[in-house]
Length: 145
Image (cartoon, rainbow, N blue to C red):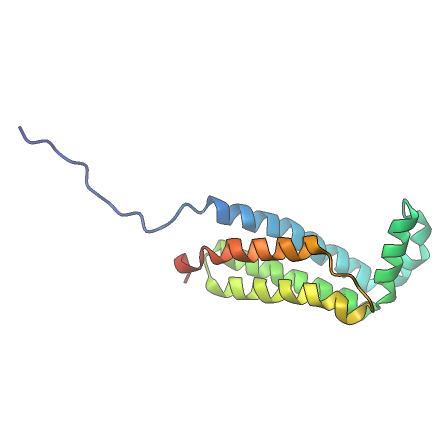
């Protein structure tokens, strides 16, 4: 009796669930960054005049420090968050160029505050999260065009 073996097919595409999770979280973070820095960059005076509405003194100080950097800093942040979002969209579509756009914009977002805010302490959490996301995305480069 001949036993029929199911045809062996190689699955060239990996399980992309982790990539999709990374992309969705990037869409959320970068999308919110783009919108918030864009709005604040367009009308920083409005936010400066309403600083008293911040819930506590620490928040007011942080907001005042960010607003003191000027419109250029705020709009550059919006731009880099927008590029990061576009990079994640390209990564979702398995395009290598998305990795490069995402990585460059995230590294620039880390450097930008140090260039505009004297004595800015680099938050370790931001560095750690940036490294984790870049590392996570890099694992899928071999499957991208």
